[in-house]
Length: 488
Picture 1 (cartoon, rainbow, N blue to C red):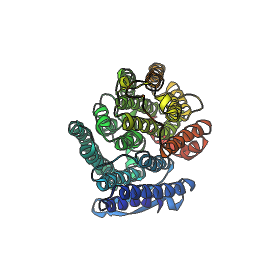
Picture 2: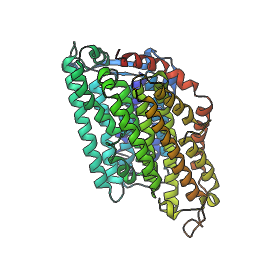
Picture 3: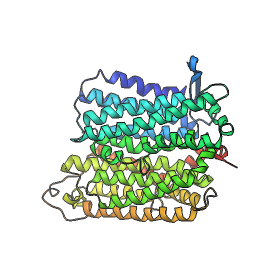
Picture 4: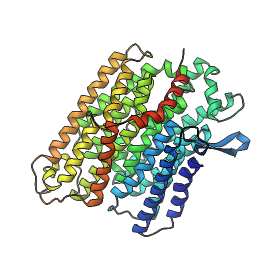
């Protein structure tokens, strides 16, 4: 029943939240809901894989032979844990932000959390698609109603991209459904298709699913919606988009695409890997040139997700295990960066790097915590991102799925150097440059903001020194997925 509760609690509390009108009441209700969800997630993570309390299956749409089938396996645990931890952090970090119609804002945030939990737990393709849309639809309204001045243009682009991707995926799901022996949407029935669907069919079906997942990650050249949407969205929504929702695309690759269409994945692996490394270099170079903090972090995210996608197509034990741990670590790190951006913008009413300077003198606590988070973002040893990125590079380099493994590894390594350039440049200009008229009267961050950033820093250091718990959670899932991805 635990997977059902993880979906039901944010769904029900989100619907109730529409009727709460006061600002503090809405914030308190959403925080309470997210904390309850987090506690239940911890309980689920503590149980061993295969425990009956981690599964639930009942008829959902009998006429279509679709079941409400959810399960908390190793990868599901990692991503539900990320989701469960992130939402309380986001709500506390943005507590001082004010929104018109706060009840509706926080209700939509909780509905989005319910959708995300469903995506990571679904074991039925139609149910997966249902929750995929449930996670996205609230974000459309959050961006269009509470975004910046150019929110309509950004939201329209976001809608068009994701709608087209979702339509492609739905076509692919229906096609596979009609080719299952039992006309079922169950994940086991879909996995059995890998030996039934011809290589020609897999080749074009691959792109129906990959485009949907590539848009969500996003991967070059399907990324152009992302910087505008991140920039125009309220920062709380941007945290959800970049910290958690991008993992929907990676999750889709690992759970639904590669194991079902193994031959198609192998056939197009070099093409996708080339797109990944191009995107990593391109995004890193653009990030270096950015003057807006939000856009810099947005392009940084594109580069990091590109490496994860590259490691998935390497189809190696090391690479896939690295992706598992990095999905969690990237979410924590990028949310930490967004919190810093939110605090700077709220105090100084600007995100322009050229207008800031000397913030370390005014906000020493913020400077110290930001430096640790930023160094984690460039995968400094002893931080959480180091072990994940090391394993992904090792997986790509040792890949037998491509003859260009050394080339891909070398190009991807350049993006790591570039990431250090733009992060250290941002730290120098924003925190350790000279103060000016705008920043001279700044003040240090509040206690609740210090606590939240300190929690993120603790997670960064603990996961950097001792990542073994996540390895143990996902080892069985990695072995199972790689077995199904084998094309030999």
